[in-house]
Structure formats: structure tokens, C-alpha cells
Image 1 (cartoon, rainbow, N blue to C red):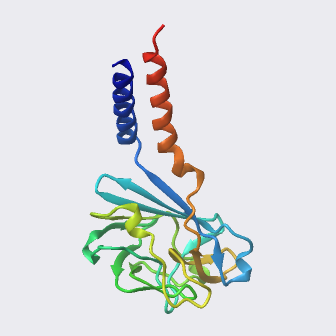
Image 2 (cartoon, rainbow, N blue to C red; image 1 turned 90 degrees about the horizontal axis):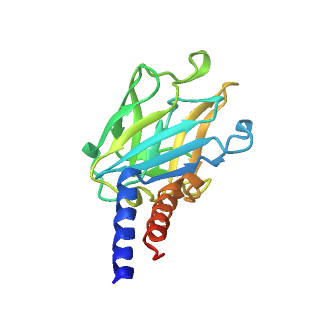
Length: 207
């Protein structure tokens, strides 16, 4: 009886821990066809489950900004059961405005289901330097797993996400996430829940 009570309390504690910490997964922008960008990583893509929605945040390496060049999107990704109208609240760290489009494209990583494009205040790099990270937006009515599809038709290989960027020396091109292996922060939720479970079980242990 005591064991059942302990297990119920531990399960409840785990549920509370899960509710307190949004589930987040962070992926490294680890590939490019631009040798001038040097060795990876070139930034991160963080997906956070926020209730029924998923929040995106794309952070670039310190020497990089987003931009728009011909045939590229500022950012491109895939989504299962995602509608164009589900992609909302798109912002960067400056005054540019953005729209979501279908399909998305970011050579050499190929075609994606969706793209983010600059609408106003856009620049193509050079002396203007692009536009600063982070880029953030929300996908409504989605789970993180819905957004982990691969691109198609890329000459460099398939990618889960890709961004069009410029570095401090004026070199431009796309960087992509080709490995869907979350960074260690992804496991914070699970560890927090396990820690609470252990604490409750220890408190319930008979003297």
C-alpha cells in the first residue's frame, strides 16, 4: 500500500515538473558549402513546446547575421500537418518584418515545406550587414516532432532546418542542421522530473 502511494506521489511530482519546465530541444547549425565560414557550429535552432504550440528561436554565431539572397529564404523548415496560417509572430532583433511562404528553399539544402522571408527593411548584405539574430516565431497547433522533417533535392544533402546568412567578411550562403541530435539542454526536463521523483520516494521511505 505504501509502495503504491509512493509511486502515485512520484508520478504526480513528475507531472508537475513537466508542467513547470517547457520541453525544449536545441539543434546545431552544423553544415555549409561556404568554406569561408570556417568550422561549425554556425548557430543553434531551439524548438520549445509551449502548450499546444512550438516556439522557434534561431541564434547565429557572433560573426553572422541573417540576410536574403536570390533563391534563398531567411530560414526554411518542414512541418507535418502545419498550415501557412499557423506560422505567426515572426521577429528578429531589429526592425525588419517577415512573412511565411510555401514552399521553402535554401540551396544547397534543397526544398522545404515552409520558408521565412523578409518583407520590409530587408538587406542583401554588403555594407548593410544583414539583420540580427535571434529570429523567433511560433507554429500553432504543433508538436516538436511535427517539425523534424528533412528537405528534399539538396546537392549538399538533406537538412532539417537551413538559414541564409552573411559573415563579418561579407561571405554569404546557407547553413543547415543535418543531424537531429538535440543538445544537452534537451534533457533538462527529464532530469528535473527524475530528481523530483527520487526526492519524493526518499521522503516516503519508512524509518
